[in-house]
Length: 151
Image (cartoon, rainbow, N blue to C red; front, side, top):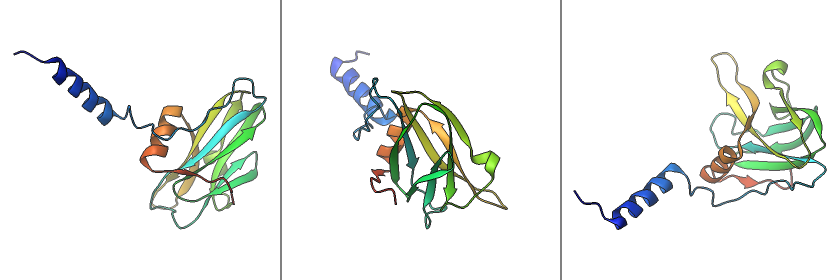
C-alpha cells in the first residue's frame, strides 16, 4: 500500500488539531525575565457547582480579586514564599486543605486554578498550581476572559 505525501500531511494536521496543539489561539503574557516580581494568574473555569457566587482569590490572607465563572486575574507578587487560597465569596473553608504555598521568584510566571471539590457532606474550594500549557488550554477551551476590574 502506497501512502502519498499529501495523506501524511493531512493526517498530521488532523492529529495536531485534535490533540490541542493549535488550541492556544488566545495567548496570555508571561513575566519578563528582568522583572522584580513574580506574575501570578488565578484562573476560574466554567462549571455548575458554585456558579452563583464569586470565588475569592487570596494571597497571604488578602483578598485580591473575586472571580466569576470563566474569568482570570493577574497579580504582581514580590519574591518569596507566599500562600494562595481560593474561597467562596471570602468565606473561610478548611484552612489546611486550601492553602497552596509557592516560593515566588522574580521574573517567573505562575498559574493557579480554582477547583471545586464536591463531596456528600461539604463542598470545598481549593487552589492548585498548574502548568502554562494547562492554563492556556483551560483559557481557550472554557473561553475564559480577563477580569481586569477584580471586584
